[in-house]
Image (cartoon, rainbow, N blue to C red; front, side):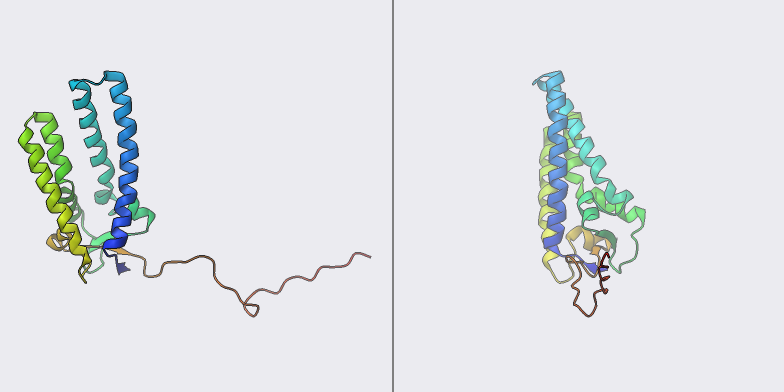
Length: 177
């Protein structure tokens, strides 16, 4: 297992983003078609979208990887490469999802300042992710909790090259008499 740096973690995040956006679009379109484009419809759509995003992202707790990380065969581990305990994964998830949790709290309580708290939390998480550009390849939330994202040490690239010497001998065609 090797540590995964900023670039490939960004690829995993983009995969997650595409999946989440597709799901949120479908959910919001369905809810707004049923309820109408009014305050109640917007509140329900926003709440359901936040809950769905939290449910999908909770894979980082239960599987130690998001969908994007799973597709790329990455895992969230402790910094030494061993499996991260569930309590550490929960704390990491809470930090990363704090913007969504604040947005959900703002929608449910109708307290607009919570949306601003969520935006500030989102900015902090976003900036903290750039720490993965350092040689340790850990985002700020990883450094806080002693975690890292690790992946396979060798990435397979296509088909194995076979020379004539390593190729299995082919059977000679038999003539029909």
